[in-house]
Figure 1 (cartoon, protein in one colour):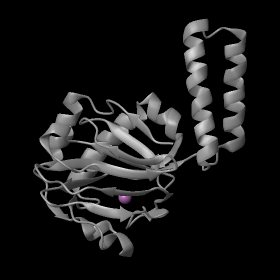
Figure 2: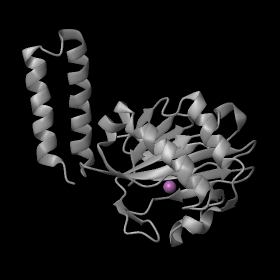
Figure 3: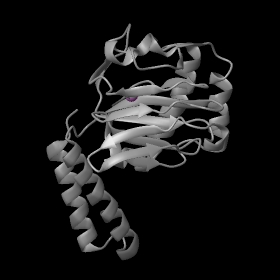
Figure 4: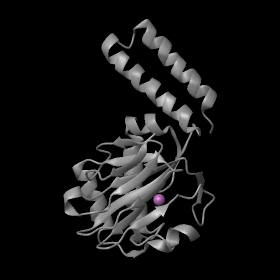
Length: 227
Ligand code: NI
């Protein structure tokens, strides 16, 4: 399941994040790459664990915690501290797959990457190229969203970032370990939850069938959630 989540950051919060990361020191993006992706990646990144990455990342984590669509779709158990990248003219990231397990250096935090997320931090008309291109079962999707919007997609997907040909593409990216490991189960829960919310809005939250379907949702989540 690939889902776009609009307005993760409002304009004021976006400006706050950019105010922290723009003046911070950016380093060669290969600092965080595995062996395979190091060959394919050409970009800049904020040093993982730097003051700026941590401060801006915490703002994003707070925003995610308040976003009902993100929570319903991802059913997050753990979110990797957000990282930040910047692609200038001619920079891109060739086809690769994200590592299955990420370990935060200097800590015992580790995460199984079920979902990958890119939160766009620059307006699409400020740069050319830089499309996040994701290969899925239904073909290839090119994603370039307004600043403050986020795409969440299966971390198992092959993907790449097309070279930027004008301007600078700035984004945050991170991984999510879901309480529900199976993509199929998670998608079914999200579809059920979305329909129950819609039915509740039309029929009323006290409708007997809405209550029963809400129970089915929670009983399935109880069966499938690992934590
Ligand atoms: Ni990637």
